[in-house]
Length: 210
Length: 215
Image 1 (cartoon, rainbow over the protein chains, first blue to last red):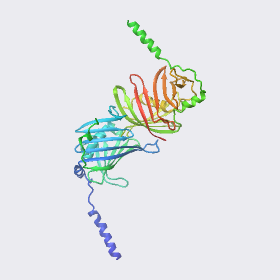
Image 2 (cartoon, helix red, strand yellow):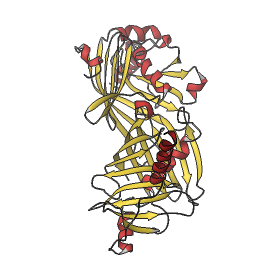
Image 3 (cartoon, chains in turn brown, green):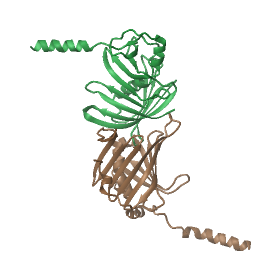
Image 4 (cartoon, chains in turn green, purple):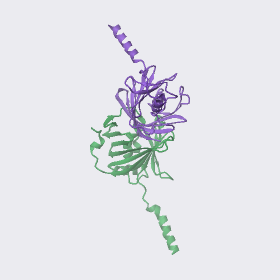
């Protein structure tokens, strides 16, 4: 009986690696193919920023919508209400002031505009096409899930953002979180939740509110 | 004709260049001063604000401001909505006439030479009480009760009281208005739900700061 059980365990253990399917994010080709299967994404996100001077992390909430090949809506709903919409390559940044959306015309941070403009490439699985970041594929390790590590190519950008980690989701072709590491100790963690795939997203989702 | 125009301009300029006159007030000075200090939170404190900035030439911008005040001085951090630190500075106010400012991080365009000092002056005016006792207490010509601090060096600060709580802070330098701050809503532990700061002049701007959280 004991011998039979032991044999069963050994069989299961030895067979386990062969039975487990290779993850979809094992190589760049797999990532691109998996991403191509996702036509649209609509998701909420929670962004947390930990600062030494605050006991509690600063929490921002928002939603993102993506439609292949490169239409994007990135909206913060609290504490500030801001909106980035990209449709057919044309980007608009807006800010809510009272009841009105106004153009965000400040030359605030070119680095962040670059990051937001890169999101479509990431969702497309097309990391290699970036002229801003050098991608490195990292397999899952202790306390660290599998992810793409993006290292800024331009040293002036590297002073502001040291690296970005794009964490893969369970469903092939998806992202579960984004971590933005700054030069100092600062990390911004964006976790996606309540994600819907391949829902019908009308053009108006990618246009500035009228 | 030209000379007459110039004279009018000079007279107008001279007429504007004085602090608002204060008339004597019947209330007890100590009680009024205590009410004026309610414009500020008790230290140590930490606060987070959502900031809508109206900048020169019709430009607008959104930021998140994190500030803290305590024995170490005044700490101010500006974040982009995406959470990236744009500015991080600490001002030691042990000597109010010569504060020491240390900039930990400033990314373009927040790395301009004069930016850190003017940001700290704005935050300090809005959230740190002037040192010592008011040098004058009185009422504006329009009837509002005011506490005034005129230090030997630096700006004069007026705190204007409303019926229930302080409702405005103004600073003046060489008799000219340099900042006007409106305290809007019912304060909680010295924090107002909305603080609106205006800096007049050609390079002037307006910051609408909505309280998100405080500790």
